[in-house]
Image (cartoon, rainbow over all chains, first blue to last red; front, side):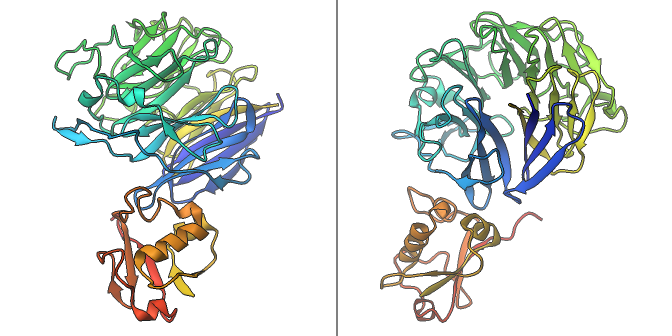
Amino acid sequence: MSGVRVLVGTRKGAFVLTSDGARKRWDVSGPYFGGWEVYHLKGSPADPDRLYASQSSGWFGQVIQRSSDGGRTWETAGNKFVYDGVPGTHLWYDGTPHPWEFARVWHLEPSLTDPDTVYAGVEDAALFRSTDGGQTWHELPGMRGHESGRYWQPGAGGMCLHTIVLDPARPGRIFVAISAAGVFRSDDAGTTWRPMNRGLTSEGIPDPRAEVGHCVHRIAMHRSRPDVLFMQKHWDVMRSDDAGESWQEVSGNLPTDFGFPIDVHAHEPQTIYVVPIKSDSEHYPPDGKLRVYRSRTGGHEWEALTRGLPQRDCYVNVLRDAMAVDALEPCGVYFGTTGGQVYASADAGDRWAPIVEHLPAVVSVEVQALP
Amino acid sequence: MIRVVLPAHLRTLARAGGEVKLDVEEPVTQRALLDALEADYPMLRGTIRDQVTHRRRPFVRFFACEQDLSHEPPDAPLPDAVARGAEPFLVVGAMAGG
């Protein structure tokens, strides 16, 4: 590997951070799409120079951007996201029926094998796919059309399909997560879906163990063990060893088990990272100390990683898509904050340093190891 | 030629320097103007009006000749001064954000 490229989406544009394999000196380029919210940008595993970005604005709606040269230049792709058939209704915050309305793309997940195939998770929650490099988008209607769909309700950030995980071992298997419906899995390339929430417990919904209705914040998988999933739920860090069929809590000794991102070490499938946040109404770290927690045992036992991170007067948040790992040796770990810092660790979390400190609020962080 | 002034973010998206000039067949209406604009600048589709319903986005307004034309029917003729190219048609992003 010759270097890394970190793709940062913020409330006011996108930034591309690049470095060599040492990951000490960084070049910062951007803002791209300045003034627009960039919820997510991500590169194709099959072609690292093919990037997709979700650019949106309360004034001008949704735009999809595509780069074929690693982010140096961009071209607009298709932005027509139309729900399949008659959209129907889901439930609004007050429990009344509310029509499905497209708001924005939260997450773009390029295919593992084809640079022109990319999935989009959108608000109001639905899954779309493009097979022509983002020019045209078609809903996978079985997702939103699940029999539970009319009872889904939004989380505080909107009713968004925010996580898409593609199984590298079973090409037809897709996991998605929706706030606040939960995890769903398809084994037939997105045609039909089943809820995968057994074992989750959520106070604040009528049946805390309901099949659907949980505010899952993010799920993560190590590609070598696709049946093992890790989850940061609204509260609780969870683990599944059977591809989502059942979940067990692994919050262990975390100072708080509320949070947004969760990720897995690139080379150690049992090593996972979370950023504990004080509570759902106090979206900042406990005690003003920004700490990443690492478990080398797949959960339960956690250690605080603090070297290089602010340990006083820090009241930023780290959002669900704002953490990523690279595939270099040793594994690099990255996260961005709502205060505009992007931190990097080139030694699997032992020591941290900011790459940039004064960006707009960071919404997403992805990283690519470059050949 | 019809003159259209886009808000800064849409000028950037369209890679248009200043005013946009369009050939629009008569009668010159809001719908005909936006159809021509989106034909010449397809990256603007969906940013001014919904791609399916063609309803104006809520925070976008249309001004011309010191009038707010935002709520005019899309097939109503635009002012003569716009149709003659004497005055521009302004697409405006509503001021918001505190």
